[in-house]
Length: 211
Image (cartoon, rainbow, N blue to C red):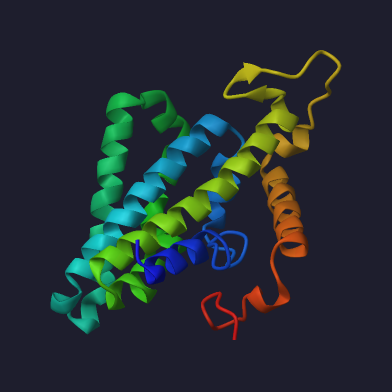
């Protein structure tokens, strides 16, 4: 991995993280993080879609007319999302039903569209692959941390297995939709207060990059 690829990878999971820095992909963050199992499947699906759509857009960038580029990007992303959806229905039908429409919403996920439009369209395939993988992993570890906290404290289980004793009183609010807002807000506050330097703070209109 070259120095540029390494820098892009580290930025995707840290300074330019799509969830806790750019606050993108919030729909799925709120919807699927009440159960760890569903969160893992969603993260794998998004990483697959994001990485392959980035590589595909980058490989075809010289032949994509500027006026229709967003339509082409949506078609490419939709193709990979359909593959994910078919595989889930075939091999994990229960999880597919639980996730419902949220798998299909990957097509319009701001993270996927944003990386295709802002990065893959102007960079070579190998760098686009690193960028897509980094953004996907950056999205995934945030969702996994939130899912662990929400399922553990909200339901007393982890991966559906009871782990809290009879002494534990479930924090029902964390298992509900508002709980996702609270968990995400606390996580973002902790990260920005403890790990994100002031110079790394995102500036509006710059795509999450410091001025």
